[in-house]
Length: 74
Image 1 (spheres, one colour):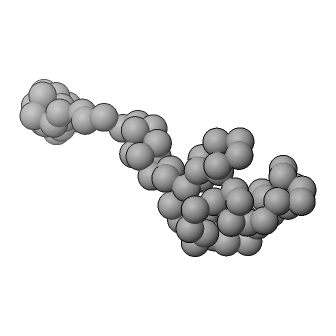
Image 2 (cartoon, rainbow, N blue to C red):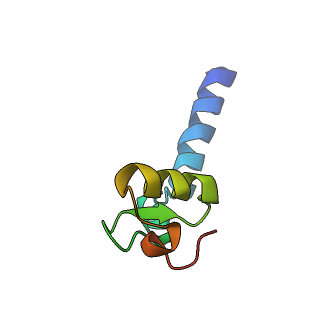
């Protein structure tokens, strides 16, 4: 029995101690989406900058102002 067996035993022992938590960020990403277009109800993350919101308003809703689409633009 060499050092390789000891290292394998240590890996197995440590694997029992560590508990795997949730690795998905889907719930946190969904919670971060709080900017919603009032016309088409598309949601945007909080970190979305105003130029992206302006692009959405001009491309999806031509003739509508930015304030018609969003409550408080970033």
